[in-house]
Length: 290
Image 1 (cartoon, rainbow, N blue to C red):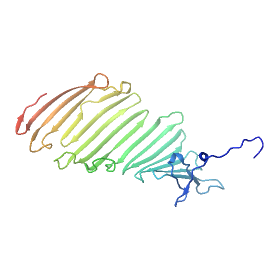
Image 2: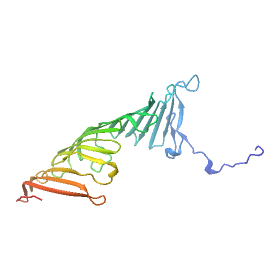
Image 3: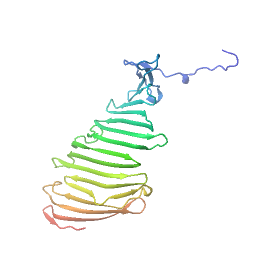
Image 4: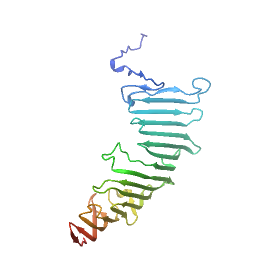
């Protein structure tokens, strides 16, 4: 012990966590979660001598697996990968410096669904100048839902474009389902078209069509963020075919109009009207207008 320097005794709490080597090189296996461990870094090709060309690192706690790569020959370029749930969910992000700022691109894969995203950022602005998100491969996540067989097929996609602080969204999803008892198979289509900026959003189309229900937005809706959580004014049209619900007891159809306006507090005010056509229930014929 050197004079003038206090003597410190290492207690049990000061010990470093025990790390055990796994069968794969460059990967740590430890009992704590990722936050408690330190990722292991190993040099890439050319590391440690005449100018490193890259570096890699990985960490694995059994639940999450991280993978990082950097290209030292190109400053500002790196790749991050994260896997979860034994590979059923994975994110990969590439980042690279650009003349006006930096660029970002990546993919998200979760339960066979795949999304791709990209964007360019200025150095003095946190919002991207240009960005894009595409949901190209759509699958029903059977491992996460209570009724995995409710959908026989799910398809479609979603796209979001951002430019000049304005976003445009377009989505269309098609499903073949077996939700209704007694209905062998039905189909449903969801369509959404919207655009917006930093203060307002405008929904130009919102429609659900299929068996036996169809609902659509009658007119575009403008949502002002400063008015939230209040309700914007909008109207909805509804068409319902009764016969698929109970073929032996119901027949005919219902047409409805619903108008929603701001009410008291967070509850909206709803005015509605239903008209029935050739409605039969339990052997009786009904004429409705409410």
